[in-house]
Image (tube, rainbow, N blue to C red):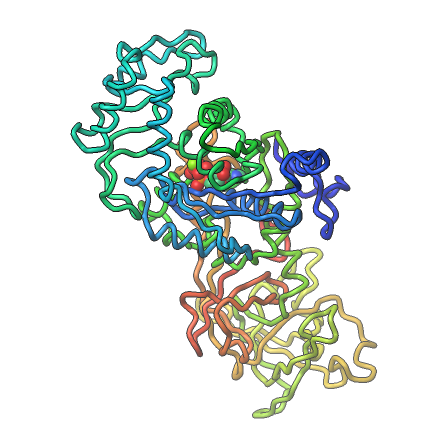
Length: 572
Ligand code: ATP
Ligand code: MG
């Protein structure tokens, strides 16, 4: 099922932009608070693994976890789940911190790393051995897999399962001391090889890996597994509601099992609650695939404005507010679904429609000479900075004899219903005069070089009587001698198909080869001094942002964040 904007508009629960929309997790928290389960405490966490940049799916989880903490006077931790040293790097930690901050959330002093708990995790593993709840296994990974059984077939016990406590302790200590080669021994929880839930068939909780860890260096040669680490980290931080995506539902019995075994030493037992992950059309959401796009040179890095990473959408021009609006609008549920990209794009349009000052840009210029306009003369025209916000004032847009209009605002032989400039048809130059076509000048190849018009001096916008003469077309323009050149990158969706990785096919085959077009355009003179990350609506075109990396004083570079209307799949 794909959810589109129209579906959500029909749903009154998603229409409020002020009150948080209720959902099943809020209901659980409210019930917990009513019965005093956590004494009113709400403590959540966002637990990324620092093995890539965050993507828009993570934003759903961030907005959920930090949003709940905000709304219930609670706390949200940011915890790096860094148990996999081969894939994790400091640069990913830095980018994650940056993205969460950019979204406007503050973890205060609650910045944690699972690696901070390595000593405790080790101690608890010995505790499990003492309790007869863990054992060292000498089987290889393949042998363990072979004995694990299947969904329909029970697993078989390892021949090492019945080792004595002291033998297990000795072996585990020697694993830690580096006496064994990588992959030769593991520590496994002793649960039940016949459990219908495969996660409970004696899962591995420690393995030997001689890998340099981005924080603990070479201190450890054994590393705890995710399932074992995660629940204990939550408990040590006294998390109340541990929110994760649906694929962890089958891991919940293991989460609870570990904490139940350790209940005399770890006093808190958080509640794991699963929700549906965000699936967004026209993107791929897994970090592994995003890494492939970056490393394969298929995009211009992690923050390529076409990427659905938070660094990418930021550079594209998305605002934190538009992401919050999106997270609120899509809501939180237990049912997996697909969210249509247009919902995300509409959230940005809605936000920027309110907040972005209007400016004029001519992206595909056509030179127009106004024959009866005095040579060497110029005058000021006034354009509102926002059509609905008169308090934002007006700015001066200079007019002179030679102007640029958009190529597609002129048609020599107009098609039916075409109201812009064409022979015999008058149009208004927005904020200025009505002009009338005179003739067109072409080169030998028949290409248009310039067109000539006349203007009616009695029709200047904002002057008495100017509006008396009505014309259907209203086009934008820039004075040629005042306009500034700017590099503009027109971005489109990165993938051509709604579900690029459907059916396990090669998502790269669905890449949109025309998703980036770089042009030199003309913009208003004031935009020459634009600040990085300033956003504007270029009238009739869309929303644009001054690129945060490439914009320099006097050399603006704009990225198109989104067009004014959803034109995907329609010819323009
Ligand atoms: P990926 O599959 O993209 O590699 P991940 O789940 O491995 O993502 P983590 O760094 O482990 O990435 O995720 C941190 C948190 O973000 C987890 O709690 C995870 O459930 C949540 N999360 C990841 N992807 C999504 C998504 N698409 N929608 C909602 N939450 C997500
Ligand atoms: Mg993960």
